[in-house]
Image 1 (cartoon, rainbow, N blue to C red):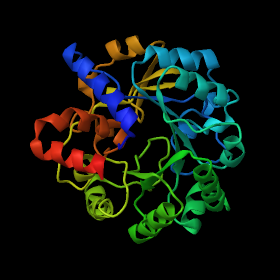
Image 2 (cartoon, one colour):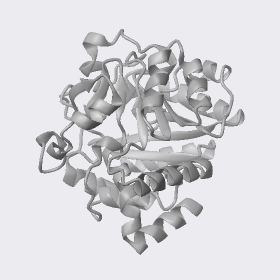
Image 3 (cartoon, rainbow, N blue to C red):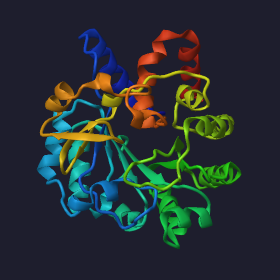
Image 4 (cartoon, one colour):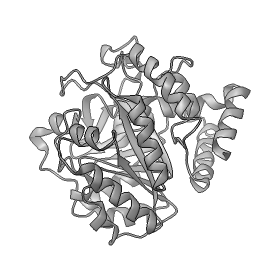
Length: 332
């Protein structure tokens, strides 16, 4: 995804160091889930169903910060569940920032307005707010009236206070792309810094026919790619070209490792075959060759950014066209 200049520098330095040290597999973003508790029960969410038996459990602040220390990724995405239901969230944010890491905090924004009074803007901190359509659609997907208005007011307050804000939009089978274009126009009007967009992943635990198959994804993302020429997308152009079927990419499942109340989740953010007590053990014991399109049937329809955006990083240097495209994208 598109990063601020400071993170671009830190990320580039980190990647070069790994390549110089001949490290083949290294993480880019730690997905930290201190709690799976949520104030919503959206139909498309796999987490609250997969972890239903342990949903009351929470990681201690010490466990969270130790996990950040274990994993060398320069970016920490604090997610869940709803992070603002985690009682130590503000101490966690401060602790991660003091370690020089960059944070993307994912929230449905229902608790954001009050939380903003307890936080301060930081160059390494970005709020990532879930937005899936205009008011009627967004409220229907989140299954609660008023969620759209609450999120919009929270975004306005965050921008007024000087926070960096991006939004995250999931494209489902029934998504109306004309409405999504209206949404993006609205978000840019109120000052959102950038837009993330990705197809939904069909969690086994969900079981509802909300999700796109690969051919449907490619068809819809032909239109989304055209939108990226008019709006400030944080999703990389190479990833978007992959989504519309123009670019072939292999998944990098270790690129966004997940740590939650059960341990280090493997093999990826979306599929769970095991939980390990340490990051090192997860990296060493997971048979990475078993996963990916054509290997594991659960991967067949997946085109999610958590697996394929890390691949983009490794692909950039292989083509002058890709290098030029990324340079233009970062500078415009």
